[in-house]
Image (spheres, rainbow over the protein chains, first blue to last red):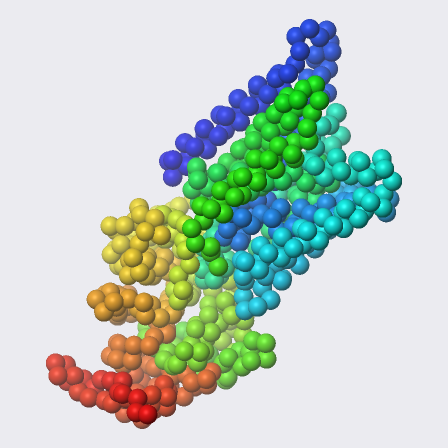
Amino acid sequence: MNDAKRNLSLIGFLTLVIVVITPYLGLSEHLAPGVERQIFWDIRLPRLLLAFIVGAGLSICGLVFQAMFHNPLATPFTLGVASGASLGAALSVFFGVSFSVFGFSSTSLFAFLGALITIRFVYSISTLNKGFSLHTLLLTGVAISFFFSSLILLIQYLNDMPDAYRLIRWLMGNLAIVGYDTIWPLLPFVLLTVAVVFYLSNELNLLTTGDEMALSRGVNVTQIRSILFFVTSLCIGAIVASCGPIGFVGMMVPHICRLLIGQNHRWLVPASCLFGGSFLIVCDTIARLIIAPAEIPVGVITTLLGGPFFLWLLIRARAPIS
Amino acid sequence: MTLFSVSDLSIQIDNKPLLDSISFDVSEGDYLCILGQNGAGKSTLLKSLMGITPVNSGRITIDKCPFKAFSQKQLARTVSYVGQRPPAIDMIVSDFIRLGRYPHHDAFAVWSKSDQSAFDSAVVLTDIDAFLNRHCATLSGGEFQRVQIAAALCQQARLLLLDEPTSSLDPHHQGEVHALIQQLNQAHHITIIEVTHDLNHAIQHSRHILALKSGKTLWYGDSDALLAAPILSQLYDHPFVTLTHPETNQLIALSSEITR
């Protein structure tokens, strides 16, 4: 318990350091003072906030999936939920659907529906035969991801060149924004998700011990799972619609946090938010600086880190949990 | 007083009948053992009483209130359950046992005095003080079975459901768990329903026996009347002999050779 608190404070402190230092990295000294200031407030700060919000949101969704399915490999990305959201967003762009509900764009709505339908579908496939099977879940997720990727490729092919190029850039996952317009529609979804997940910490603790155990301790598993599917789909949908699918953050961050904090979600939720937020800020700073003055999409960086991490998890897991 | 009443309970999964009109009553302080072959529906019955397996038809009442009126949380305050296949628990023993307090908590409840006393008494009863700080994965089968029972006791439910609690244990640890169950039932007045394959344990320790065959009730009555009723061979499709125990003079059942 004390270890958990100490490591959580450590993560908090590191987050603070990262938030304070990174916006200044790469600011050139021989700019006029006014320009420098403008860059800071209109480009660096919004981008930093976006990276933090997206990183926190992705990590929370990953944390929830890993707890619900008792496996570090089960995340919104590996289960095809992010692909579903991408397909939804791509479809809304392709058909030129454009409306907004309470200020939230049709792209977000399509991405949300894509995510929710996908997770419902993948989960129901995994429970078809005599209860839940983790292997079926993961394999269905992989199959769905491939299937949706092909559909997105098809949409790209059918689009004209400039749109197709925009779609490709967006699919790489990108945080390069100017001003705060991207942040406001995203923030409420991520905040809502984090709040709901934090509220359900006790239930998540029990869900990690398996559905049967959770039921016998009094958790209404079906209801809690529906709520969690719904809020994580909202969060993934909103993030994918605004920044594209940024892979592997939701797998790496919660797993590392579990190693540092233990299994209590009361501490894991804030830890994953802070760690995920600052992790994506660091990745984005690397993406922005590594071939400066040009940039690479941040999704490329996270995926380059995530691939080997995924393999490491696979090798480390001595016996597959079924 | 009747705590649990089950009447005409039937369960089908994919049109396959698993349980067919089962009826029994469990009164406060009772100790019921459920016997039967593998696949007879014993575990399904136990799971349906914990709300894990949904019931297709029939009536279950707790304290004369219909089962369906209980939320899962309310149910967990009355009934606790120790399942057959222990899942891999990635937790420290004490954290795992603390989870047993969930049905008594709302979202931001702090650990109270009553929580601590429930925890302490569960730990004392099951005698697991020595490995409270160990990781669940490092425990032996017997140790983990006691931890599982402790976690269920921490729930402070009146009815404890046990699904083959001793089937993977050696004779010494079986005896230990049997003695623990006895103590819980007699000294602490916890009502017990236990699924077991240990015939003589059921006859000696439990008060009532429900014998299931292919999802139907084959026999239901007082435990000491089981051997007088010639149903054992039918129950297991296997020959049995009864004889008197040389030390206790009690009647015991012995599985005999299969003649081909």
